[in-house]
Image (cartoon, rainbow, N blue to C red):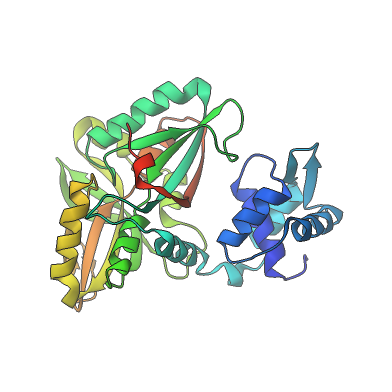
Length: 316
């Protein structure tokens, strides 16, 4: 068993989340985003140790990748420590989101999907289809190819992450709880009920990513027939913040955001929520990605990949 030190585990997690080889400099940057400030030299030391354990291997001058043993070790190491990892990452990302809807300026959180160039055109058409069907969190997306995470022969697609909403609310003094992720049944554009739902608190994996991988969505069918199973999130805010939140929502909608699907207290569809808090249900920014998965294309997605100026998102 590997040393139970968080820095080793974080390095393994980062390498598992990225398909391409990664060097000490990039690892140092990503570790800093997760709260582990380390010099490039220190990261090199950790990598050499992981090499000796057979968990990583060097790929020329490109950096390290996980070995099969490293993948297994990452999956089983520090399960207790990983509990709550997803929500903690989202909370950090919300804090770093500085978007101001009144001026359409500041940084927003985004998801990064990396696709091979040979399938970029059909994948782009799927993104367009989901956007035009109105089941995305935001009205546009962007391409990026000059990013160290995007390997040669690939293009990155930036979609706006719904955690941006949390950042806006928090910076205006409204505490937000990301409560649930689920699949929402829609019939003739009318939301009916949640078919599957998982709480974010205590989760070791993003619930929506789990639903996509398990084939529990029907996003493409919705785009074609107005009926299907879409990815949605449930957030909760104090009841006393309803008036202020509606004002912020209106400003964000003017900027191209598409939420909420509904908001209220008590029962939301078939979900019984806290009667003392307002629940907001919104379509996830992952619906485009889920539809690409349904079509069978290969890709890699990093949820909550970072923050970027709002002006660089949504040119398509």
